[in-house]
Amino acid sequence: MRVIGVTGGVGAGKSTVLGIMEEDFQAYVIQADQLGHILMEPGEECYDAVIALFGKEIIKKDKTIDRRRISDVVFTDKDMLLKLNGIIHPAVKQRILDLLGEQKEAGREICVVEAALFLEENYQEFCDEVWYVYTEEEIRIRRLMESRGYSREKSLGIIRNQVSDQVFREHTDYVIENNGDLKGTRRQIREGIERNETL
Image 1: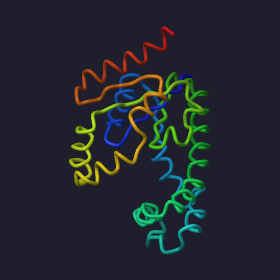
Image 2: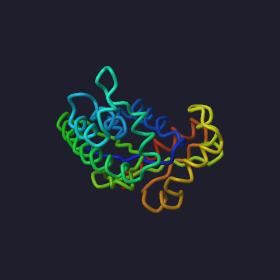
Image 3: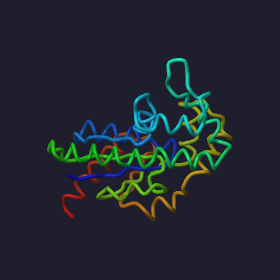
Image 4: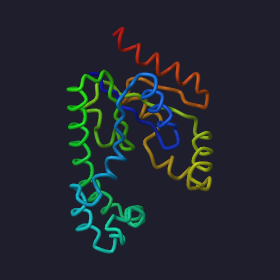
């Protein structure tokens, strides 16, 4: 089974790439952020630890964790963010390894792992190769303003806070240019899949 890691900055259109890989190549897609949310649900393994860290005021009426309150805290408190990551990331990684094991047993040919902090958290450890989805900064800003309602300043602030294009390129094996031409993106994904078959 081939495991492809997918990374890129916010607004780069990673979900478009994941969707194509799922649709055209029957890839099993694992998104680390989604798993992180699941692991904070009542009864899941990070639920109690997150409440112990932030206090009972983050519990909503329906017993779920108020993720917005958490993000407000960690946005300004780097120490709390590190502690939160220390709870969530090891659990997410273990869940990913479990899912990859299940898919391998089921005979799946391609699995894709996507994570926001892919390089920072060393998700490449369990991937055969890593793809970087690159999109021009102006397009990313426009996408964030349209899809999330962010101001230009906020969008730029988030982008500048992330890993630089140079770092992404240095630590990944294949680059997909995703500047809005869907046909071109699809072609590059196909080339990426076929490229490995000829290596």
